Length: 472
Image 1: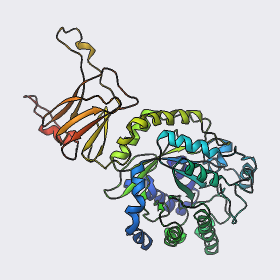
Image 2 (image 1 turned 120 degrees about the vertical axis):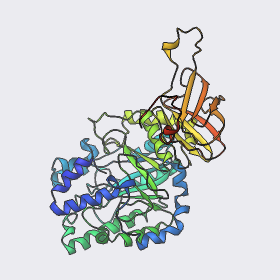
Image 3 (image 1 turned 180 degrees about the horizontal axis):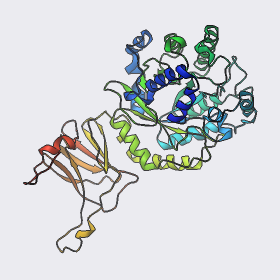
Image 4 (image 1 turned 180 degrees about the vertical axis):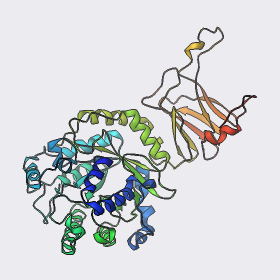
């Protein structure tokens, strides 16, 4: 993953026209095109072969909705984000020294997996090899790996075992771009180098999908500097599915794959296309000791609801410290999210894509005909009216533009039945407590007689204005 769009641009500018082409490809891989969809004229032959089994392979993934991303490597030792080698121009021989000083504590991944389970996450995706080229796994193809360097053991195997022990699905991140391999850049213009580098890449992927049992996700990243044809991506995916028939793959090797990957933003793909937003907890993918811009539990919960509302998943990143410990702030945020998920997970897991436009204080998800109203701005009452003798304070959550008849409503946290009124323009939940029953969002489940849709903007021109003019 990248430190940011500016980082990607800065890096690619060094390579002139090739960089411009790569930047265009990078945008197609999730940073510019709608839904992060790859810019391909048509489905590849490999992707067509996957169509027949896609629904079955991805059933668990659509149910899961929430996963943990882990960025961990030599860059963690420096603690200045995962792009430090390129941003600071660190020479390869100097950067290689980090491999001898990368000595994480045993089985750090157990803490990650337990944290993921407590947070309500259902799957994990770990960096097996990032752009720096260091392999966190045992491989016969390079000595630049965790077994033969500082760790002295297979970190990917520890991760796989930890995830399985907590009942979580297992995903592998793999960066096609490689700053360390001598052919990693010249393969663009040197056919002999391309042949060597592609064989090396396919070989590493073969090892990953052969040596660790059943793997659920392969998460490619950054296909610079080659095209899908240069990477032989169709052949690559054919090998992947031959080794792991139940696996799902993303779209970042230049083929459409099974799902799209918007990065650091939420953007739903077209109906019928699976997608997953990947985001950081602060502003860095890898450990960055100076980055304290942590997202709040409220932001995470709202992002979760937004992804689920659009039929997508949310892959939320942690950047472990050099010894593998998770930064305390990350733990605090994820545990708060987990406490909320203990009560409200049913409003996220297995939800259906909905035509539900949020407002300033509410987000929405749905499951069948059940509408879940996520109130993150609890309304309270109007203090200015307390001086009126006849005023009775009351908490009301009002929704304009609900197109379905409500049958019943209750607060999920307490089970309290909620009274409501409804007309063709407004749905009003009434008589609720002055203080929010839950944090960071209170969810009200509303049973409807049909699929609920909400679009207050579409309804506004129809609202009675009682002789008051308005321009819309």
